[in-house]
Amino acid sequence: MQRSLDQFEEAFEQEAALDEKRRRDLRIRAANRSRARRIVSAEQRGRVRFSVLAIALTATVVTVVVVMFETLAWLVGG
Image (cartoon, rainbow, N blue to C red):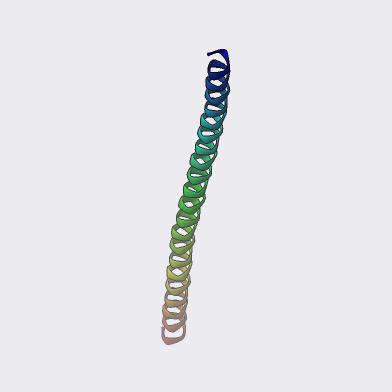
């Protein structure tokens, strides 16, 4: 009887240790997934910001060139 109780306690302790390891592993995996999602999100925001910056710069260049040539035409023609 004592032997089976000792075996039961040992099995219980092993199962508890396995449960603790599983929970720890799950927490680590969840943290890694969360970190990966944040990284992907930051990369996507960076791409959008870069695109907006490139479009703004292009629009500025086009505007400056048009105004410059219009002014030049006005000065030369006038």
